Length: 403
Image (cartoon, rainbow, N blue to C red):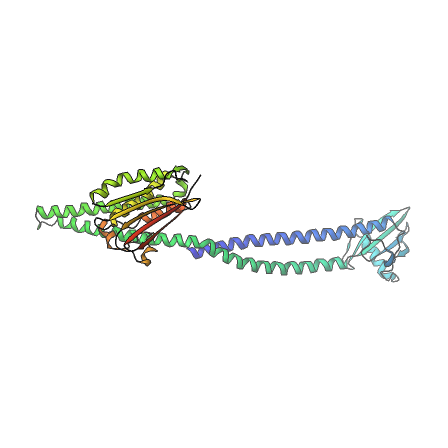
């Protein structure tokens, strides 16, 4: 799918580039042609209005930029005078053909393509004056312009083609990543659902077997209930993850008293830590405010505190600290005593459905909580990471503060 999307991007990009190049080159050609034609017409008009201008190239005015010559005809259309030293005007047959071609045109001005001449005719006191200007240089300029435009267009097309390939890879990369994550998510979710479904089906089949007594059927029913609860928990976490993926659209940023939010988030976990004979130490700096969504930040705190009480060793200690980190940031850390996490696992903890150890399976975790937390923190333009050393596993969250 991504390959097809990449090709579509390149085709659309190059179609736009080709159209734009054609428009630009056409405009350059059009305006150049119009400019040359305007200069040529202005020149012959100037000559026609001032027949006394010198015909010598070294004495011509600045606006006389093309080779030209003039013919004067009497009222009967007979040639009576010629002017101009750019051409040999002694060939009577040439002049007769030129005059015939001029009068075959209905307009006062036009082009005689056979000789590459532009003409203008005017009447003055019963006499007709014909002015001719050589446009060979103009045509050569236009032909050269066409060749250059074509060459530049081909080079630009190839350059933009290379750029479009690079842009396509850059643009499609997030799509490929999202597509791969989706495929991996579906595969992992299917795997997670397959096991409880197998257990449920097996226990249901055994319950229908008449060889088992009521005690066994009760055990089978209990197994079905446990697996059903596990499936419900998985589905709920998958829904939370789906919400987290769209967190940007649902986030309402406002000024949040993060110190107070952290203090409030601890309260429902204190009985849990006490019941498990775990120790919870807190150190929270006051008046730390951030710009964020209080509900989503509370969800991150719940995930990290829940992980701490789940994976802490027996009678272990958890330390929660919130303090300023530099001038514009705050740092939240939640550390617990537990089995050290290998470096390779630290880099994968925030992946979906990733389990660092068997303890996650024992506690009913599906490896989605930290992925949800990472998505929320990224939406708040913060950072979240984990460290593990000397039997202490610590999760850090860094967020920007507001004054």
